[in-house]
Length: 402
Ligand code: NAI
Image (cartoon, rainbow, N blue to C red; front, side, top):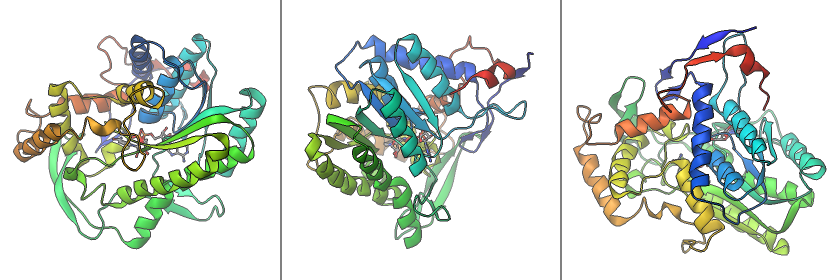
């Protein structure tokens, strides 16, 4: 049976309500080709990626597989097609198409769909590593971005993360991609409970819990590495990010990195916080005010030739730093591929440009609004390439399994 659906972009504010699986397939292919164009490198061989279905986690999976020749396990929380016409989430198809391409390349690529915070998922993944993945892994990438976390010890308890400043309200402009508008917004400060809950969801506690489970199960090789993705960003965004709830949660990564490091000493292992660049992702689009910083930053970085998408950024990080010869460490032992974003002339020009951006001119070539919106549409399989069909066969898509 054939049931054709015509896909078209539907946005609700900065959240996409529709996808084009054909475009997603091409978008994955493009990312693989980018990595292949850079050649092979001596990377990890057995990789577990938590948050593997989109943006930074997916990019880490693609570079380790197609640059380093790694077999990969990906864990993510995604929705498949249902009810005869609901296509599901972009990440659902990213998992499927990544697996198909990896298998064509002779690599193992296994997807687990469900809650990475749960102990059940940890047990299921460990069982799979032991029975079907060669017994051990040499890299764990922690790239979850989630609005909530169920407490593993008490399923009744659900922590919710918020993106708010601390102590003082912040007012600034935000973008609305649905309406192509720039609107003023005030974010009220978080209370203590909101701060604590955001640390529970977006901090490093679950990262350390994964390490505890994996180590106890003896599935880590000697020389094992683990990384978590963090963000510090520019002083221009400190008031609502670095000094806000998310920033405090990111500081928590550093604390858990230290604890994990001591647990990995016996394995000659290494736990690393990687501080990444600001990029266009599902998660960054819901950070208030952040998108306006991005359209200024991207304009400046594009002119300098330093703007990167998630695949460009992760491929460079893995190939030249984590598994390469030019790592850039900071005084706290974190890896700093975000140094391009923070170059002083880049920041000075971004600051100048931000002062010139208004609701009347933000869509013009003064800024990188067009690039930003296209990158966002790409995440959902739109505007990837003119020749991509907007027609999909629902019954065919339902047959695809992660
Ligand atoms: P994203 O929203 O594109 O991806 C999040 C991933 O987490 C998806 O694969 C999703 O399925 C998975 N996920 C969410 N909840 C889950 C759950 N309960 N169980 C299993 N999987 C779950 O996010 P993005 O932007 O790639 O962020 C990844 C990490 O990178 C985050 O820690 C973020 O703070 C960090 N980062 C992001 C930057 C940005 O500009 N977007 C900059 C620097 C760091």
